[in-house]
Image 1: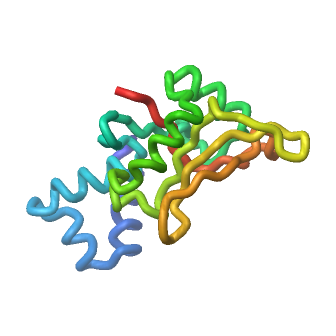
Image 2: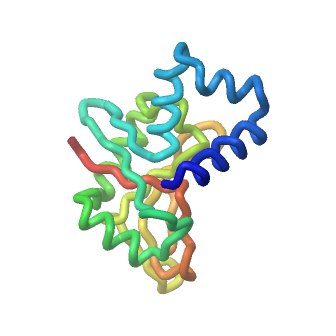
Length: 157
């Protein structure tokens, strides 16, 4: 990245979060908090859910903002993050173990558990509804760009 571009982005960030926010962000005493936040923002989180360890993985690449469902399913297979019904049930049975910081911030997708709804293929997801984590369905055959950066794939460690 060019120095001018980096400086421009830093200036923009400082303008957006204000002087106090920017000073807190760059403070050495907040380094661990910023690292944790960045990992969550980028989607790389390791979690112990019940007796299993999972790593949360983003499915977007590069500058993508959204992808279609078929691409998401293909990437899940490539990343060995193609979990299904048994893992959905495990998540819901141990939802107290899902990090509180992720509530309302991410949805976990489980592409191996699929069904047909009104004749169209869907895959399972787990999302926060404001009170608890629930299982829902996402369309595979959605319009291009139907799955944004909020979703996370999971692989077992």
